[in-house]
Image (tube, rainbow, N blue to C red):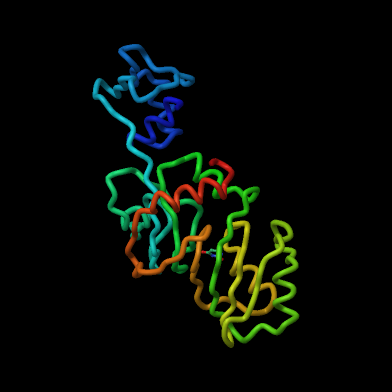
Length: 231
Ligand code: URA
């Protein structure tokens, strides 16, 4: 793998910051200065400022995100973060984003390649949302949600939409734009009061209380890789 990916996997820094470390000559590989295009494997000795570092195994975590927690690694306003909730020795980062007030399924990983694929609309992994809304959408509003809505950043892709109960809508999206569910429901005249993601790429929250997390099973990881075309 490339040296910057190795350093990120080792928990040294993000890839971009690792590039800076490499450029400024602080990284050595087998005793030689590392280059931006250096490729390293398990047998190579990588040092940063003279200290040996080694890549961590790939880790995949499913978090039941509670409300009031931000989807970043660190927050300048000091709010609790999803990364703070997942006390894993590996440096995992969230795949995509849930708003601070949104609850539900959030994947975190240090597998950059898989994270990139899962977040990319081309692979269209399904995300299932339950939205408590103002009023109860009529059949016509649900049809509009399914067909696509012109938002300021373009038309939404076809989605699934159904009423679970009065004032409770289930939406299945295959894309993930900022505030997308809230903007779609607002556009059909039913602002969201509460939003929960019940499933992400086939993973549900069975047995996970808000604020708790678990590692994915090997079968779940294989399924994710297959779904995103990496298997
Ligand atoms: N859509 C939203 O509006 N918010 C989220 O957190 C996720 C999807």
